[in-house]
Length: 295
Image 1 (cartoon, rainbow, N blue to C red):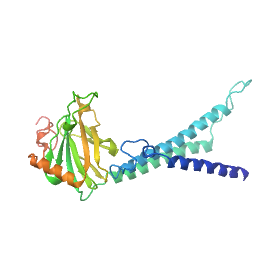
Image 2: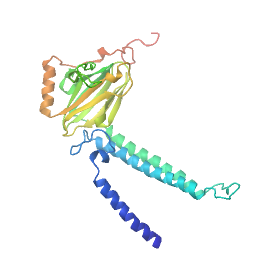
Image 3: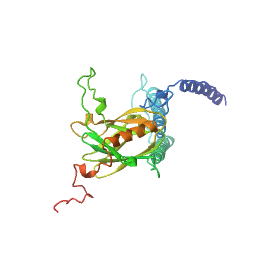
């Protein structure tokens, strides 16, 4: 009883210290220093908090497991070390049933737990919207992006970004030439992903979310923008050839009025309609009607 009472009194200051420490954490610290979180601002999409929560919780669990394993290892090294004057081999034990049950059941619980929470979050992230507010088709190509604003029947052809030779910062690019995808705030978005040539990957770090773009296969992304506006950097996350590092784009989340103005500007430039698969380099993929094999 006295021993349990001591443990209880020891747990109180430890718990209080943790509460105070966590209360003083910044947004970046609470979200594991992942990109996209700014003090006083909402996350970029409705899925960002969910993804960061899975990431941070996983690391906390793994850190606790690591502390226990390191502690038991050090305890065994210290307690069962060879003392001065000892000779021969230590007492040999064939098995220890409680320990064997422990290191079988605990890893099983961890694996099942990680699987269950990952599957839960994946199902929520990958759930399609029956009636999205905005539907966009993204074509990845070496080494740029084409954007079809399907809901508005306009398109925006992208070109490969060019280096800015006049900038004093090495690696700078001409910002005005970066393909930019406009999205209205507080809307349900569906993005269809297709490739014109090789495998690419559509990645916006601030959204903590990326999806491979595979020739001959259409992938989708579903998310809801928040009232946080701004420009977020995107890039291809799959090595896709010589100028892979230049395959950049921006995602610009704007008020509805600015989004409408952008759509109008595309229409005024004559970009009405949709860019189709006729510009794909892979014209012999299954489903295109092209002869296959020796046909």
